Length: 183
Image (cartoon, rainbow, N blue to C red; front, side):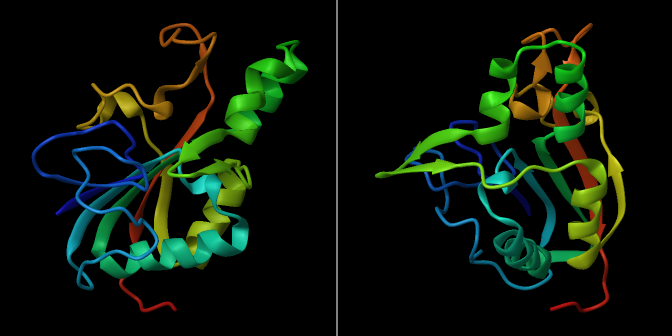
């Protein structure tokens, strides 16, 4: 079983369970924070640019819930705005306006407007993941995934859409669930 959490309008198709708080026909479930699956039942979780909508305390509970359903040594694949990448570009002269969306995010979810509550670099996200029982944390190349043909925010570049010469501003992390129980 593979979960696409916070999928929005993107539908990876057969073999994926789509979960998002929005209103899309392809959704199987709405709540990414309380998954309706048994412990140790999921092989892969993919969540692109959704983690930053939770603050640092909320995100640990969220990751523990995702960890609960993952099989031992199963993969958690995440993409979040990359603070380090954006600050380097900013210090090299890119305008602040190019980073407002990735840093502060604003999205309509049902009757509410939600915003990004935090940002990450590799070290800070790795620390959170370790604390929640994940290991073998490393960056992944979106081109090498089975969902690479879906242009989501894991493929965010500056200049916009310049995937050959631009700078990736998404921190794409893949890790595995440690089989040792952590609450």
